[in-house]
Image 1: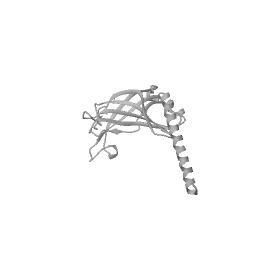
Image 2: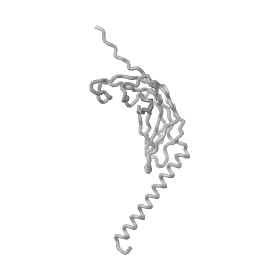
Image 3: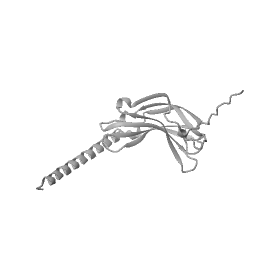
Image 4: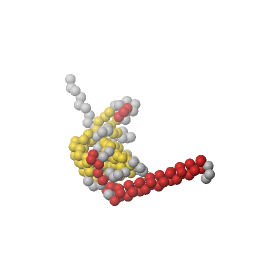
Length: 190
């Protein structure tokens, strides 16, 4: 410990150890506060007034392959949710998304799609009141069609902290709807 290099290495090692301990303490206290606030059982949300529609799209961007049209689904919904409890001193932002989960054609297959999402950067913006909100994304199934299948809508979230791992969860509110039949365009009569 008589050279400048040895002393520099000791200072850097001590600093890195102290930084790692401080980061671990921040992560632990942040997660502890989220457990205290019981954010994994948020029941202050309501999903209602689901209007689902289906259409055939003939574009590659909508899942069509080889000139064969693909069945696409969009929804319109109402959403009321208070997600302020997801914010604490270590929360950078919260990513909120509305998903639909439905059974696949085989017994073991389960599908999950995202219809809508939003990034919330402050607790003031964490109270959502959406009326007749259109889905942000048009979704399609890997199978040819998903008409007639039941889907469960759920509001899910992802906390992105300043320090620490991403935390995932969902609200306790769920709503089930059935994928509709595709409406065929009416042919014009001459």
